Amino acid sequence: MSRIRYLLLLSKQGKIRLIRWYHPYDQKEKSLIIREVTATTLSRKPKMCNILEYQDHKIVYKRYASLFFICGITPEEDNELLTLEIIHRFVETMDRYFGNVCELDIIFNFTVAYHILDEMIMCDGSFAESSKADILRNMATMDSIESHDNLDRVLS
Image 1 (cartoon, helix red, strand yellow):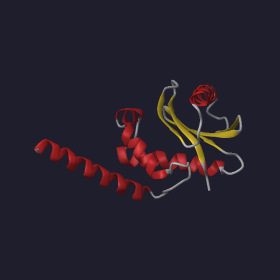
Image 2: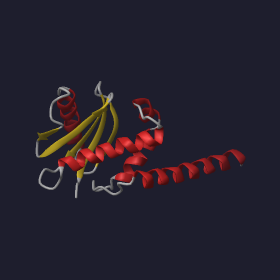
Image 3: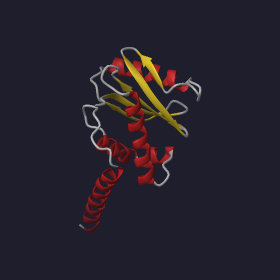
Image 4: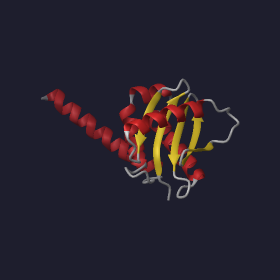
């Protein structure tokens, strides 16, 4: 079973687009991780390995277009290849939801991206759902509930 400590989604300029903490860190530790992991990941060449050691854990990352998807994992408990697959599944699911996802989709619809992430990964960092169809079905249900609530507000 894979347990993720954190997931960062960065632009190639180093701007944070999404961040989710699954391990308790204080604010100082979070700031240090963001600063150092961002610098380390962005400075790596495209042909370099996507897995590296950092402090007491490993970093697993994957670049898709202008975005870096970065996960911190515990080396003794986690499988790096499974973590790469989780990242890929997250990207595929967003791609299906948005229809060819891009950075602007995430910027302007960050709550949707967080909902998709929350459907996939539980609050303790363990992988919850791998079926894109189930995740997209749940997202469609949430969308229909939200549009129904919006319609009720307009009509009242």
